[in-house]
Amino acid sequence: MKKTFILCVFLIAAAVLPAQDIIQWRGDRTGVYKENGLLKSWAEGGPQLLWNYDGLGEGHSSVAVSSGKIYVTGMTEGKGYLYAFDMDGKLLNKKEYGGEWNESYNGTRGTVTASEGKLYLISGMGDIVCFNESDLNIVWKKNIMSDFGSENIKWGICESPLIVDEKLIVTPGGKQHNIIALNKNTGALVWSCPGEGGLSAYCSPLYVGDQQTPQVVTMTAKHIIGVDIATGRKLWSFENINRHNVHPNIPVYGGDNMLLCTSGYGKGSVMLRLTDGGRSVEKVWELAQLDSRLGAMVKIGDYAYGSGDANRFWFCVDWKTGELKYKENTLPVGNVIAADGMLYCYSDRGDIALVKITPDRFDLVSRFPVTLGTDQHWAHPVIYRGVLYVRHGNTLMAYKIS
Image 1 (spheres, rainbow, N blue to C red):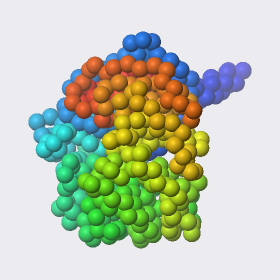
Image 2 (image 1 turned 135 degrees about the horizontal axis):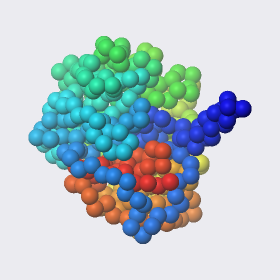
Image 3 (image 1 turned 90 degrees about the vertical axis):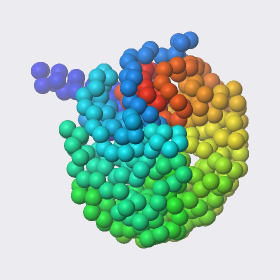
Image 4 (image 1 turned 45 degrees about the vertical axis):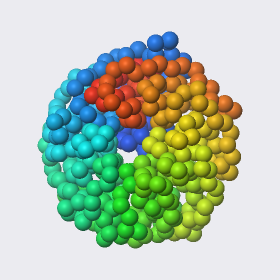
């Protein structure tokens, strides 16, 4: 009887816990969080603020979660720091890892990636750093400029490292070492791909594992590129140019051979279809209006949702055809994530909105202003176990949304 009771308690607990126990860039890089039981509307002043921490320094990086701890980075007096918090917002540890970007839109950029007891980040100055998760001691460190013959870009390296099995994939953007895989435990070079020789473009790489040739997909300055994950061989490239060689949005993969790649600065969106088992691509559609600069997109069902940049609207488009389903400007543009039938839109003016997912209209249910923090509203929010984590410069906030 006792064993049966314990088993029942365990099964009930497992049923209410989310599937994503490690949160990296945009959850699992899709921006769609696997959570249920979330609020469908908020009080007038927004959901309950559980806690906030003021003291991160400058930065735009998002929260990562692993082993029941919250990790985020920030810059103080030109130095980058990795912070570890418990789920109640108590600071557990803080580790300095080197210089950070302080030339324009100062602060940390890329989000931490966790894997098997280690944490990984790339600084705005191009340092790839591996930490022990238990004590934040540095295990190994490399620099993509000095070690791989690349150069920094106008607004500093902005990338969240991708880990697939034992490989850590990053994009130095050098002529020879354009996209590389390192051994995640030692930092040793596993393979190097020259790509098209273009600079890094602020884009975090994506893993597409369901093709005959599993691959890494990323955007460099003038191209979208697919690389064989096993060997580093370039499989395909597709020219993709905008005015400033800036492509911060991670591609969105639909699991149907379709890749949505979105950029601002006059470019817009292009949908590619992987063909020949992933060894080549073809263009399906383009939409210049859908020009998200750094807000990313989410795919829900047969539709994609996100905002523009110069085109300051929130959009819904048909995933397969690119047909515009709606455009709405009742909320300033920004970044977007999704969970449990709702969009969470964080505008660049500091509003957070809860929007019902429907292709019929931009169905805004609730919104509230973020009044804490500093500088730009660029960090993408994170959802974990019924809590919405919002980073605004110097401040990290935790809101109860379940």
